[in-house]
Length: 311
Length: 311
Image 1 (cartoon, rainbow over the protein chains, first blue to last red):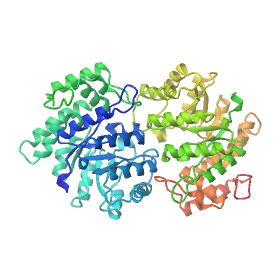
Image 2 (image 1 turned 135 degrees about the vertical axis):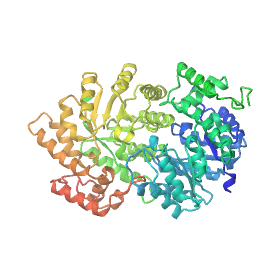
Image 3 (image 1 turned 180 degrees about the vertical axis):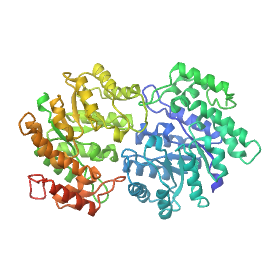
């Protein structure tokens, strides 16, 4: 079973039309192209502007994606929400549709909430979804959500829902936190994904499951290569190569930057659009970003994707 | 027109049934009782656990409240949401139903967003609602939302939407911020409400519009008295009296504490219930809270409300 779960997942960016409605056609096209690079699809993560979408919009995009014939065992749906009924509805739908898992943010409006409150939130979702096929991936991203997932909370969920509590995306950006999780849950089957490929090789060596990373929207193939060869002689070089891309792009607002790269590759300015409160990367910064990526030797090699003749 | 807007507003707590569904009957009863105390009703603010409710649940409660015959000119609907379409739908509904205003959080998932992005968010909501009756109250609560409303953002909204940009709830807890806003917008008609009655008298003396405060769920009458007599000789004593209640209750988790006071007064344990990620105040702390309130001389005097024979 574990072998069938990809080691690299892209939280797929969500394209928007001029009226800011989600663009289902470009969405499906992009997802298919990422799947061809060997990555799994997370619809909808932070990079997807998921919390800027209504539950109805997310439902519509997920159905459209699966109707297009994408392999459901390689799709994780982001279903976390501040509102319990929204989280329940989205998770139930993801399970019903046969997705590989539900990636769930903690409810992120109230700050300083207790582990007891967070446990009740997740337990209530699991109890109401009431489907043994549910696979819960916790989403730890304190720099954004400002609400953290503790090891104690994971232990309690694993104890009471051992089959359902499947793993975590650790986007703390803190290797000490990742290592603590890897040590604590080694051998349990609980999967620890890092939220940046910067920690990929290090985490794989400690029993990590891989990464779920924004840059997999533009660099999935190279990241996948490291996943496949991480025990090989080239592993450090492969890590250095993907690090270069990551370091460059994360000097810019990440989501807007990823979208501008796609807009450039595909010669399709619609890809650059974001929903408020985000703003597009301006032309000057976009030009700088593209020049820096080129200087890093970021080759396209199949990265261009559909519509640009490069895939 | 200004005189018809109440000076004290309660962000009304939302009662939940045993299955955690919103309890419309208790909600309407509580709202009516607060209105009788002379306060306006904010459905749905932070104290209302608004972000723990789905858009559909909020819609249902608001319709039920207005169907019950509550004065719409004394109802402000909380309509902010991370997702633009949710904010648009909820705001359009509030305007359509004749509410006095829409209290809008900034989109609060992404942190470190620009004023340009926040401006686009609010401007898009205003443009899409496209109704000259809309009255926007910005909701500045950086300790919780972690996304702030700057004076520059307000200026830009006031310039481009002078009729619609009606005011702000300043829940920064920072008197310097409130005074800056009062100075900046004095004489413009832009209303500055404080988010705690601790700043009520000070803000009224500087041209403030009043307060929108959690404790108005249990202490509206006393707060209203200060609003009515703030130029009188007793003003400082009235301020000191409401300060005592505020200081006591805010040593506890505020929402859970307010609900326990209502549960106690009404001899109705259902009132104590909160939705995850919040947790109820435990019996020991509840007992401490009630004793401290009593020691402060917090008299009930009509505060008990319906169901306890005290109103």
